[in-house]
Image 1 (cartoon, rainbow, N blue to C red):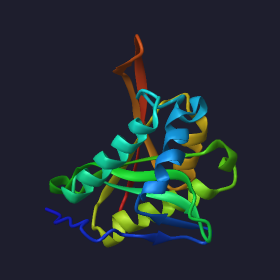
Image 2 (cartoon, rainbow, N blue to C red):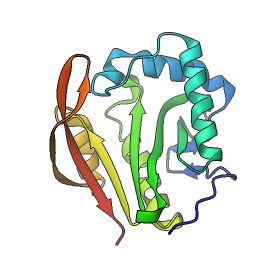
Image 3 (tube, rainbow, N blue to C red):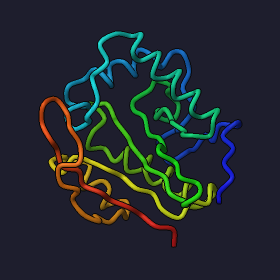
Image 4 (cartoon, helix red, strand yellow):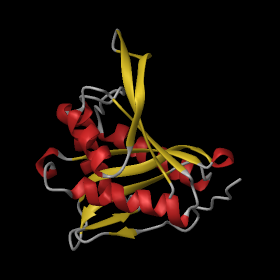
Length: 182
């Protein structure tokens, strides 16, 4: 079984990005991200309605990291500390060497390859440094942008989970992707 220790935050760098820990100034950008209808369209969770919602989410992410239950990064451009997105590992199963990745990016940064860089950095860190064998990503099958990103980053579609979750009065499907360590 993996032994995880996120007491020291794992800052990651790509050609254009810094993936860093959340800081208090991220509350407002996180609120905008979690309140934006476009960003939340395919995420079966309530949109943030107040800054307090974003602050509580950040506090929960910090607490889960201290318990080694998850780790979440703020995505920022190199040389500009402003949060433009987030990416994280959730539903960690160290006994099975498996984690789930999730991500969001502000719409003004879509289509620039930034989340491609972030997802590759997190994937390499997870399958390499952290020692996981498998990373899963679950997305709404209608989210073509996310599905294309996962495939570009070497994730394979393992199947469509039919009617596996309920959201806003509808029973929805999920597309399950995974990438394995080499």
